[in-house]
Length: 344
Image (cartoon, rainbow, N blue to C red; front, side, top):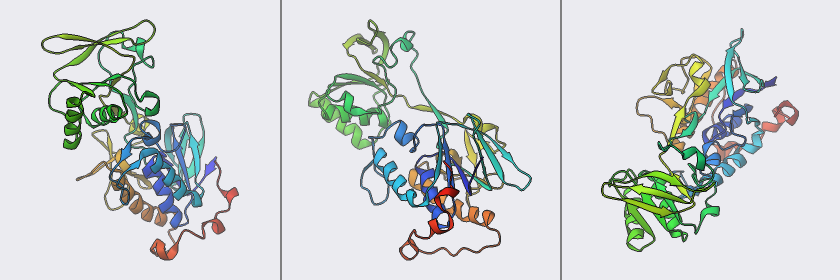
């Protein structure tokens, strides 16, 4: 059994930052994630997509942010159980918890922090009879490694930020992009919409409005799609179609842990982001409360406050005085927690 001070379920950006905040208070952390690498959705879904709302970074790639968070957490030597889903939380007689994964790995700690983002994700798929025949054979729901698609002509469906961001990105990288949307009103940033229209006027993109891809054709792999609008059917030869209709979040086993759930999120107290089960916290996109904003930087704030209460639970007889890191630094952790004390 892996023993630690705080079990963090979810190794995304908020979970990784919680390691840093806990480390400043000389607390050990062990992270569990169903994804086989740290970084959560930033690593798995869009590692090369820029993020614009991280303080101090006008823009930073998602994968680079993960690398920086890992470097920031490294002095506190967190443990990781990756590629295993947290399936159950069992409270012990001493009020501590045992978290067991899908592969039977057990973890024991007095505090659990759920930082699982929005849970597990499944792409929202269009209703096309032979869709499954072309999945990973031309049809892709996530742009994980854009380098391999640069310069290739493609069709992208969707009217949100993700669809427009990638359409603009590839059009600027030499691809001709057919952007297909069921309306003429996009749900993206105004600047992105203007940029898409400019690229269309420059002949680098074609905007298909009030339109949908309804037919796929090919012999073993995608060769063309049929775009239908109110007036006509347009056959477009392509080996790439990205239906970017978003991801559908599913809480999975979290919904069976006796936590108060509201609209597919965990209800928390904003004093310290503790759930209705004392000792279990929820930070990041997985939680909900009045005024909640699903932003990474908000998750960082939640992690910081959660760790303060976690320290009191773990060390009820000790008083910790918070100091600025410019004064305190990040030293002293190894003296109390040698390497052999942390298993991974």
